[in-house]
Image (cartoon, rainbow, N blue to C red; front, side, top):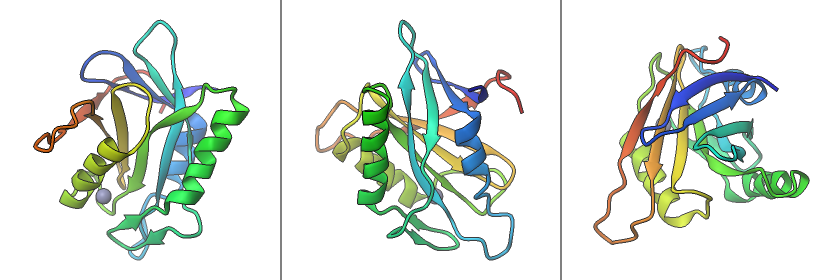
Length: 171
Ligand SMILES: [Zn+2]
């Protein structure tokens, strides 16, 4: 396994994306004029004695997902089964780290809907650690954001912080 892309997490540590996961996501890049958005969940592990996180698996679109030119709705059950399966087969090291989806734009940025959806994930999903990670695969660039949870006050609005890509990893 090798790491294809590395992003600096805003509060220390790095997010690495393994080859296999990146290849899956890039295969859904919306290069054609009618290609629809795709997405899935990010599954991976926390590296012991560090703040580093590695994405090993990106799930692919599954039956029940709704794919449009500029929107993607992920069905909960099929992707949850992938998370459960990865947890079982890894003896509890592979866990849910966040989500990815594609955008039909060269350098992606999250839409208002994305930000609302990410906040919903932070509030409702069960995850390890303090943060969830969100990747948007554009036509040229892959953007990465982190959102921090932990404060469940009604007026708390988690912010999405863009992570800078580091020169590590192969291209
Ligand atoms: Zn989006």
